[in-house]
Image (tube, rainbow, N blue to C red):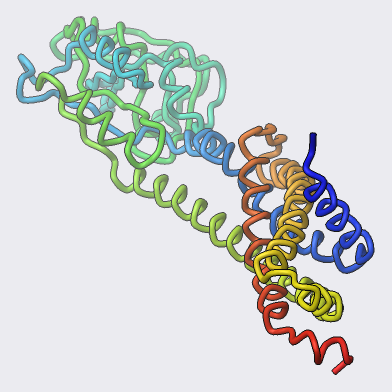
Amino acid sequence: MADPGARMERRLLWASLWRQRGPVSLAVLAVAIGASVAAALLHVSGDVNQRLTRELRALGPNLLLLPGAGAPADWLDERALRERLAATGLDGVPLLYASARAGDAAVPIVGADLPAARRLHPSWRRTGPCDGAIAGVRLARRLGLAPGDSLTLAFAGGPRTRAVLVTGTFEAGGPDDDALWLPLSDVQALANLPGRASLAQVRVEGGEDALPVALRRLERGGAFRARPLYALSRTEQDLLHRMRRVMAMVTVAALVAGALSAYGTLTDLALERRREIALLKAIGASRRRIIGRLVTESLVIGLAGGVLGWLIGFGFAQIIGREVFHAGVRLRWDVPPIVIALATLTAAVAALGPVRLALAVEPARALKGE
């Protein structure tokens, strides 16, 4: 059976809140505004790494894998390379560089798994199907090539000539635009280097700790030497750090603003209740009981503000997701407890104002109206 004293305290609590529902509603709204910003940013931050990773994939590979000191020659073993990439769970493309001549013109050749290269370089602008020989735009302009043209190549150290059909062109915005890309197996056969690769382009995704971990796993055994493209990796990591810092600063600023608003509202509420507080002191209520009642009222306000703020914040998160990422933000059930806890803490801090005022009330003077 419930304690009659506890039941009475609950009734008094709800009666007090309901009697001053106007100022209480303002305090709830003040807490909810800060909590809504925290809820929106927490929901967005849960997806931001994944969504930014997808956006950053357009930048291409951020690591090169080269022959290591333990490699048997200045070439990578394609089979061992693919096994190492599969073991580390990384997306990579073995490349074999060669040179050929088309008449009097030198033609740089790159052998690659073309579908995998397209995945690793999503920013390439392609023309025509890219499932055979694809020419960089600068090479195509230099040789006057277009999709559907045939090109006769002469390779040193392999068959004298080979006719290839150019199925498409691409623009990468770098040295790749000067090369002719062919399937890796064709270049290996033409260059008489079966099962070999010059290097591998690799994409490492994740936070700032992902790259060092990938380096250690790739270089294990000494057959491979990993060289990060630091400018690209640091750009990605710096972007993620800045995004997190901005979100944290905005969240803190919103919670501080909410706490200050609630502080002022609750202090004004306590000023209106000076006679009530004085009466409680006059009939013998202890300081602990008075403080407990005020803090409890503030925590109830914080709880209500947290729930309301989470609902508003989730709506804001959907707007941010659609405007920034052009997609909705998934609901995260770990956010409501965090938001409610932050709102409750904000209200508890705001309770310092009414508590300080209540402790300073002198019953005799307050009851006289002074």
